[in-house]
Amino acid sequence: MRSGLAARWRGALLAGVAALALAACNGGSGPGPGAKAMKPLSPEMVSLIESKGMTKDSPIVVRIFKEESELEVWKETRNGEYALLKTYPICRWSGELGPKVKEGDRQAPEGFYTITPGQMNPNSNYYLAFNMGFPNAYDKAWGRTGANLMVHGDCSSSGCYAMTDEQVQEIFALGRDSFLGGQRSFQVQAYPFHMTASNMARHRNNPSMPFWRMIKEGHDAFEIAKAPPKVDVCEKRYVFNATPTDPTQKFNPSGPCPEFTQPEDIQQQVAARKAADTARIAALSPMTPVAPVRTGKDGGMNQVFLAKLQNPKLKAPGSLPPVVKPPGLDYGVATNEPAPAELLAPDSATPSATESVALASANVPMPMPRPAGAPRAQPETVLFANNSAPAAPATRVASIDSGGFLSGVTKFFGGGDEPAAAPAPSATAPSSAPVASSAAPAPSASPSLSSRLGLSSLGKWFGQGEPEPAAPVAMATPAAVPVPPTRPAAPKPQATAPAATPRAAAAQPASQPAASQSVAPAPQAAAAQASDAQWIETPSLPGATIVTPGTFGQ
Image 1 (cartoon, rainbow, N blue to C red):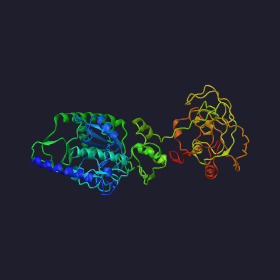
Image 2 (cartoon, rainbow, N blue to C red; image 1 turned 90 degrees about the horizontal axis):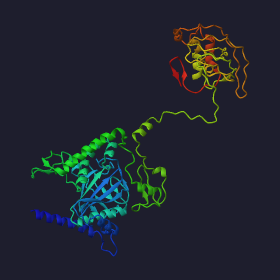
Image 3 (cartoon, rainbow, N blue to C red; image 1 turned 90 degrees about the vertical axis):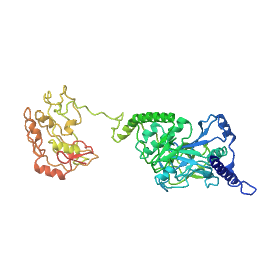
Image 4 (tube, rainbow, N blue to C red; image 1 turned 30 degrees about the vertical axis):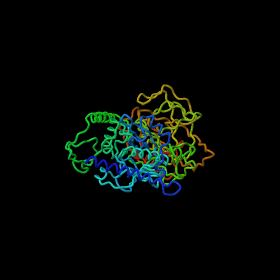
């Protein structure tokens, strides 16, 4: 019975190969459209095969890695193990990382697929192709839909893995020769990325991670055994290298798994590798930024082809069609002229954890560096104490920020709309002042910072005496700034503050005049100030404005 099955299989295999051969001619004098399907391998490829201890018709395995846009062809060596023959850059794939779920989602398949001679298409509209066999048993168990998902040429994809015509010509020939050598089918393993611990850590939050962990077991089994794993499906999951304990039991993709055994040595190594990777992923995750689940770019393209689109003179593995649609664009670009670099800029490298923290706080504004030639302001020796020398009169200018922050602060701490009188000199600062001065500042042509902000009255809160009012000084009118009519100054009562003001005085409402303040605007004057232009001694800076004590306006 077994010999009969083998004979029927051999007949079907030969029939499939014969179909490929018959497609090579069309009965005319010239080569037909299928002639490319029987084109022999190049001498360079034959030499590469021999150099790696392989034969031209030995079995193959294909592995695909989406994120890196790479397709690998592995071939059986003379010692029975598989080794990497060649890596092909993928010209285009569509969708996002993750398996295909339904028709029209533009997803390229992920998982384990079996390619038979009947799936080889020598008459493809995309030069040459082979059908991946989606949906497989696993996909059907989950109710996934879709069809005609290929590996083909023409660098154009809608759910497929597209190569250049020259690349797919060579891949097709390797598969064809393996069938001629007796391989009944070859396996395609499609992964989202190289299944390393670092990549698993980057994509740890992806909803497809449970699926990826499952297919990683088959990935690891292949790399450990150097042979394609036997793939079955039960309980809607992949199982690898499994043999039912009861030979009469079968694997039901949607049913419970029968009792099965697996090669002990391989499974021990797979388990050890899984434990090591799990520990490595746990160690890397806290310091590895999470990759986005969706990029919105509709797939990818190997960097070698992106570079060629920017510079058509560069060499690439194969020729590109006249127009190619790169990832992230809704339109195609001509391949015979340089494409705009900004359209094809590769993704920046994933930042490290430290860089991610820096990027997260990058919106905090930093102060601008001080110009080298900018004049330096006179240092303030005492903040809350009175100046030791009289200040020169300041020029009155209209405040740019009428009712702004500095104006509000001045009125809040007792300053009126009129310029404050110059403080009288004092020998030493009181001990109750927060900052003590060891020497009086030199006379300055501009008022001190404390008097500009109306903070000199704060000194009286900390026990300083009331300065004597200075004689009025004529105001100079700047040539470039028009001065509105001068309003009569309100009378300023002279009072002498006690040596130390109780702390309760600081709690008085801002609207009530304090006995220790040198200027207390009358209610009538305060009402008039709301409609008149605000005055301070220097232009105030734009910023928040005190509307009422404890509230701010912008």
